[in-house]
Image 1 (cartoon, rainbow, N blue to C red):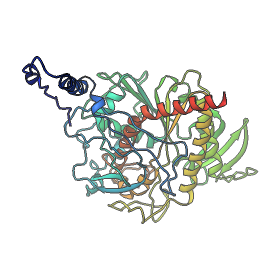
Image 2 (cartoon, rainbow, N blue to C red):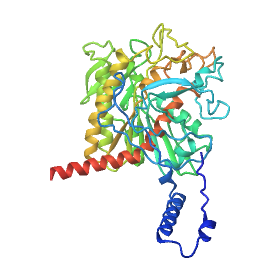
Image 3 (tube, rainbow, N blue to C red):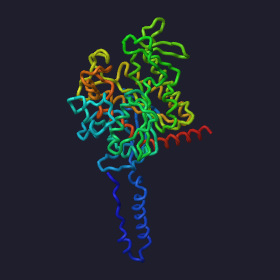
Image 4 (cartoon, rainbow, N blue to C red):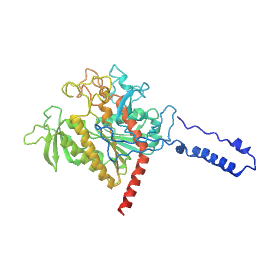
Length: 456
């Protein structure tokens, strides 16, 4: 809703008797002040609040340090955009999917940024109900993404997506959501048809968005001497070495969204101090199999170390938590598929097994990085998409990311997300967190000052 102009009662004041009692004059003067101030400072009269994360779901534990307050909402530009929630305390990441007949907010015909393999409607997906849901947190509302508000908040700023193709999937979703206001132009230094390394700029807002493709977050390469036990490649991971393809580029950004996960399920050989230290399902002689979780933890630890060691980085790092795949009746390379057409309820499934372990590793390494980063004045935030995406087995392309006769590696794709689709809600989360950032930063500064006073 747009701010409504308040008509001031100048006529009545002008007609007031000249010898009015003092109390009446003071009362009129006070009313004038209360009426005029909101006109010049609309955020005072339209202060709304964003939710604070609380530990209300044992499957998706929130951080002990993640007390979220709110940023004033005063950039609304369209009548049909909902206001942000007025709840003071609410875990926006715990809830259920509820019907939203107004969705989607773009189509594959109105947005050119959709990657071919996520363009489900183009390739004949017969159902459309998977696009018509929104996330409803327990105890509050999560506003639908407001593109004008997002661009205004990030005016003059920059945002980098660092991770694999699911991270790129998220960026393309954001581009489509923002297309109702403006399309970006490609300002990449070198052309990249794969869109693994690309920069977009929204000229009217001086806002830059980029993606840096790094499937393992650290230095890695595909082995040339073997195709691995599964015949889908063997990857060499240098667990204590940075991936300079992104670590040398992100220092200038105001926000980083870091994510990784699915590439760690492939066969890998781990290197530390330039020597083989183990592997995950490599079946190589004299190489101990230390498992997927060993490499995953070390990779995130090195990625966080890279960020905390940047000399001039002053931005905020959002860690987007693991988004589980939904293969049923087989693995991704053994005929598994995802054919459901409706979301799960929260009591119909749970995070378990490898998915739970990967999630918990992220949380633990996030906490450690946050603690170290705080010493340098760096901020970390948890973009906890895990529960919401766990409940959406219906949102993947499955076989509708390509033509039936095409020879593709991931024939039934139950990893990435259709556009439009559930992944659009990740932008709802992101915008809500951006709006809460101002008040949260002020509270953190207040706590630091209070701590320093106690120490002195």
